[in-house]
Length: 311
Image 1: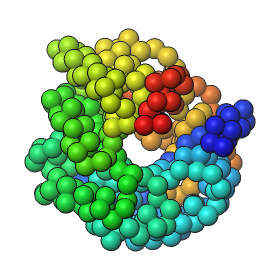
Image 2: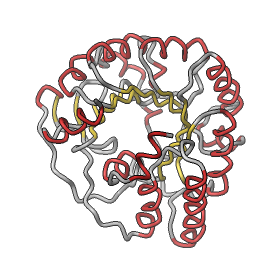
Image 3: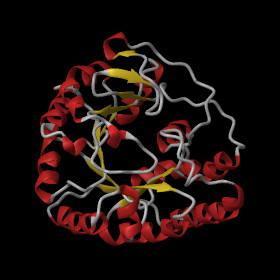
Image 4: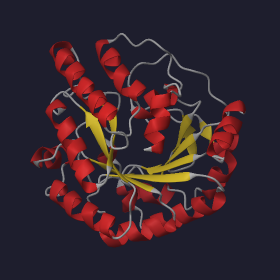
């Protein structure tokens, strides 16, 4: 059924994945992002429901993101409304985890969230410093086992590959495996606010290639923990070296809907129109990022990908 819906959406040139950015407010202080500078008054302009937009696009995959989506006290209502608006879908929530208690996780799970994606770039206090939230790692590793014990069995760590956490990638995978979780990888870019501190390039190329080779070797031994596709991981060194030249398909398979219902092809692009005025996008000649939302959308469907999904 999912394959049939994917083919139907593809034939109509409609997005398979819709990201609902339910708020741009955030209480973290990440150096690569300026969402935390959003004025609290922006709350007044945030949509009270994304159900109509969800019904219009009718995607297979839905992501609730931000900003920090758990800042919305009505997040459960937003999730439940979208859940009821689409018949065949898989709903994900991206969060830094700092406000995610077992009780909140359970209420979001009951509302319709199928997968929790929790940001995790280091296993120690470096993650607390990078996100600007003291005690964040300890909080995450208290909450995740409690969620698993309560039957919330679909949890992923979202790990951004940076110049200073290459030694953390496999340890994060091993910790995820111990907890019965998975890991989604993406790669750092300065596209959000121009911060080049953690860009991968130059002298780090060899270390990056070795780190990626380690992840791919792990996947060959054990599928289902690293949820990034083989193709996406293999292309990261090409992008970091400047050798990746394929046009970006952002806007074709994935779109972002901002807190006011405006559509943009990419989280780092300006909005183009209201969702009611949606016009289909064309590929764009942009290589500013190699986020997972770009790389996975362009990755071909190969046997290794099928094995990942089955695992």
